[in-house]
Length: 322
Image (tube, rainbow, N blue to C red):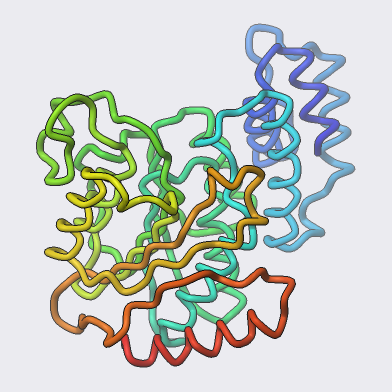
């Protein structure tokens, strides 16, 4: 797949990530390179069509296809120098969130999951395929405002045969999304430039631009069902500022803050960009505050004994939450 992306990128002059999205679309489109205004040339189109047929994704599982797309995306993102907020969520994080959702649900449940900052969609794919392997049924909604990433996600979901409604829009605008059982989001960190829209949020800053990641937490809590659960991948120091205190006050009013767990630092290239997992449950019928908020560090996944103890603690904690 990487070779086909490289050939298309050089022929048309797209970024590598754009070329990956076009490559996936061509594969979805019966392994046929699409030509627009003579590009790619007939010769290159023939070369690409041959490469697509040799790849033959019909012989791969959905999880294998996801990993193939992920590997090619990581290479493309490195070549393009893609900004931090557009990078893929590490698999270890996605699989941990998927495991947690699995522990919170029964086999006969039909789940609805949304991500209002979905990017390339890999986090949702990881979770949906894990739940599928656990015998559960789940559909999802993916929203993002980046045209290139949404296009890529749309093709990836199609190839992975996942039931995902994908929308290109600002995740902080009103959406025609039904109340969700779960929301999951690896939140983009930074300022939100549309002050007029930010003004309607309780978590807005009093002066200047508001933090996009604060607003996105509030937005996604709004779209949860009563007792629905939100998993937010956030900066470890999320609540350490005056704005963070305001966010915490909002969450304590609208949700039960059930857990704040720091991911292993070895998952991040730079310790200052380390992240934590914030778990909240929307107030309402069936929701309750656990007797002890789950706090602390998630052990490194390669430390099997410590990680096993963590999962046992988590599973016991979930039983109280449910």
